[in-house]
Image 1: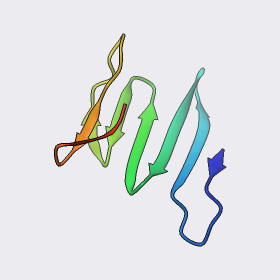
Image 2: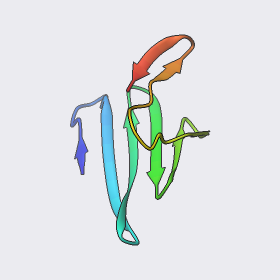
Image 3: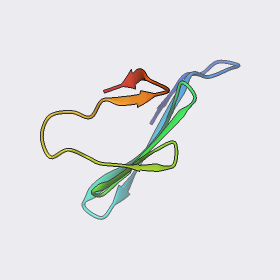
Image 4: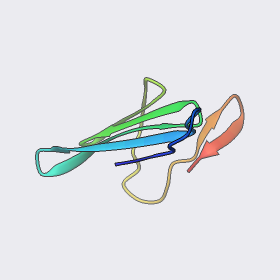
Length: 66
């Protein structure tokens, strides 16, 4: 769907139809995010998807994205 077209790309985002929803795979700044249905993984680890609000993800104590 989108990507940084350079010799050393910083990100890439892909989507595909998954039933009536879209599944997402993104590689951003060295981190991998996968969302499919009601499940999410960040760098291979299951991550809760809040029903409201936002999820702040930290890596080694640093906030890397919301």
